[in-house]
Length: 343
Image (tube, rainbow, N blue to C red; front, side):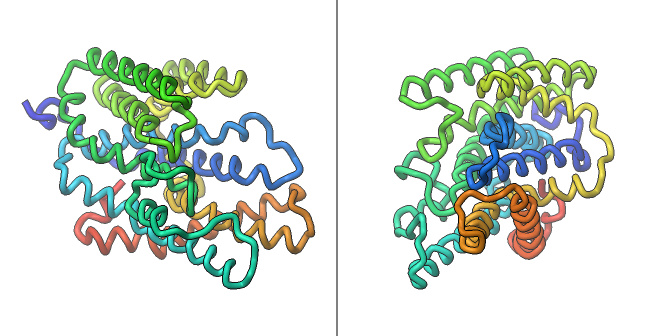
């Protein structure tokens, strides 16, 4: 029995609640990375903004099942994901490299340098696989390297996970997640801290849990309010007690609950979600350029709070330009017959 025969529900239109969630998560990451430039303390919730990446990983697994589960042939699938991610990755990587080179040419102090091996690893999306000693160049892009690892295994694991009974799939996903947590701890670094130092171990259990959440959403008729109430317990507890694993435990339930109660949302929120990938990838360039200019203009390294909305507006504007000038055209060029249907 094929996956199509087993699960007749076809991928539907855009899930607006999950699109909006992507936008909120991207903004959370931006605030997390910008916080250390300010005098003010942004609080514990913003200080845990690195966990928005884990939210992205769960969302990726969910959306992959929602969109590709009956057509995840290896070659076409990878081509579609390449077209989705690579144009923005290549342009932002080149942008960071040019900024560093220009700083050196002008004699301006820079916090990095362009070296051949890290540049090639970044370009090939291998820089999060433990092949480098630190984050380099466009530092948030380590998570794109992790996504690439998940995409490589998705066609192989989608079939078994979608065909087996749901209860067994849930059990195997939980066992796999526990095993990854144990292996990460045993090899010297908590799973939720992994980035350049072998990020696949961080994304894969979350990606699989997202896949299982999609199955639950497509195959069952749960009460969305009940799911969201249950999700609120680990999410709120994780933020209150600063417990990353507790927070992450609630993310698949959050994604599932929002999927189940999907409804039309304001256009501005949806637009933020649609440009969220570009925002995530460009905000470090805005950070490097914007805060450097602000430091020179204000004569201080720690910014007053009024600078924050200026920097956020600059990051969102840059993301909008990148989305319309690179992300969408890049997909159309690489996949002229499918660009409009890509997630």
